Length: 198
Image 1 (cartoon, rainbow, N blue to C red):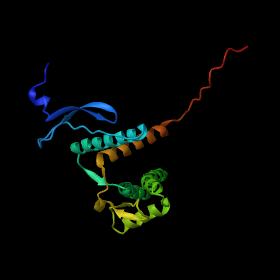
Image 2: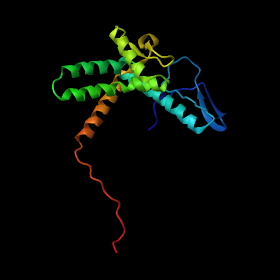
Image 3: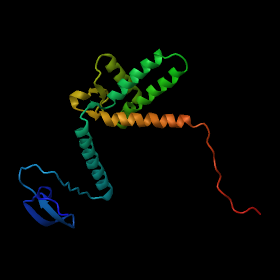
Image 4: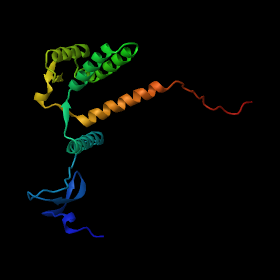
């Protein structure tokens, strides 16, 4: 079946252009009307950097798509994870028995995100995390890892935000994997099959 005219769209110019030695059929639309389709042309000197660019564009498009479904954001740069770690540590202190040790370990795993950000920025991870805890204790609960210089930064002022749904899913998946691994009580090792015995 032929698509109706409103689905076909319109173009101001159609031409065959050469982009990076490859001939492409190009549809241009100069008018200010809203269109439902956009094309992004990426060029690079190497295929690996082109793949990196493609992945970055796909991530950006997917982030935008997720934001249209649920626009809620949380503080980035390790701020949210550190707040969660502090909350979980408080919960561990109130929990009696051996369970408190497991809860404390979970809080330590949440600190890995700000530690990794600090390490990738060439900073001392221990002092960065302690600076973050001190900033949060002083009431600066929107402070995260400053990757430009040692210390903390107000991430909401800088606009460093993470998508709530993505962060929630990541934490949920990590917890599910950890629980699955903990449920394993036996590992069966299999040896390679040898040839016939003589």
